Image (cartoon, rainbow over all chains, first blue to last red; front, side, top):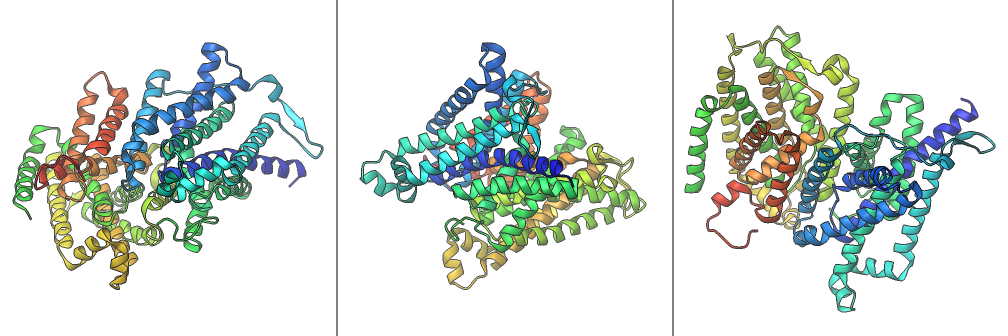
Length: 292
Length: 311
């Protein structure tokens, strides 16, 4: 194996890990606050990509602007969903949140398919990000390096925000004990809505980043959401560190696996998930018995 | 059995006998098979509090196996059904051992992931699954010497099998085993404190669910002469979940009702210009169900009194 080949595989792994980490992160943030597993996360990811594509087609929104605008738009959409629909399911078995977001996934994907057609459209990255960068030891596509950098930056930002900032402390307080948090004057309803918006926005950001790498199609969230679920199970549901680490680690593992035995790349994450459940049911970073 | 339950059972039995005269027999076969599938899903959800999003693994796995047996064993239909059902029983024992280690929301995600392994495996094992093309058989073969090529004949054999399954499910739920399941669902910690090995009960329930689902999948693929990747797709698991909950979870008959409704709706939509919007319509109806009538149709029908607030 040459250095170039090994480095390319390594970066490929990090690049797919970048998407997993962002999606798992959003899922975990939402779960931590709402106790809802957002099945529609893949659909929100897809909406981010479509917002980028149509923004460019209809309004000539450049890619860099889409990085901000699309997550904002999808985040607002997510908040509207939380206020109008998910709020009604609070206090019920969390399974109903999963079922509702499953129904929303069917609706959202179908509406996009009706509007855009089932086939996808290509979207190209801006010129400055296309081409390759010489890293000294190897040459690698610039755009994928950009994806890795953005994902790392957002991951660290969210981690810092939740674990270290004052507002983050309130979010954690509202998660641990909503009644007491309300007694201290924390507006938990607002926090829940904002949290869902942020989670949705991160999913959309992953979608924007994915737009130039794949075909922008209504079904693009279908496969990745199942991988994200597995990663969240591996990392430990609700653990932000777990989501980020598991996301990147499994991206890497998938890339390494596909070097030795290519067909395994699609199933490796699920196999790891099974192993983790057998050895450590709470997930690698999860608190055991926290949620059964 | 409450009087209302008996009435519903009688109405559904009459409807089942008349169904192949009302719709194409092949559609009637699909209704029965999806109904049994949904009953299997609801055994876990309604009676174990476990939402599985991966039962398509058994539906599809047994479907492929049944077609293979008919193809390789001189069209032995009975052997195909038995082997495919046994296959899901064993697969359910293995997968269930892993899945029941976590409950609640985890369970849904784990079943989804494990089913996805089956999906990707089926793409690889083209000799047994035909890959993207799926498998087809020209004839269903013979059932103890009788040809079941006639769709109506196959429907009634399927109906007999499904009726037997419904009877068995009702019997099991009525047994001490069923009582323990109910105890676990009502208060898991207390059931553990009473000395019940809760996970073992859940595991047995999982195996029962997998076996019924596998049997349903085998009958479905034999009925349609084919097995394909879409049988293993997670959308199929999701469809069965929707049928079970729309029809009425924890009522046994409800999921069958839900399957009839779902299939009927799909059939109806396919005759209108809104074919491309099937998921949209189904999704809207299911969202409404989750928001406002979580007991499902049979649940509402069987509820002792009409209450303003639903549980």
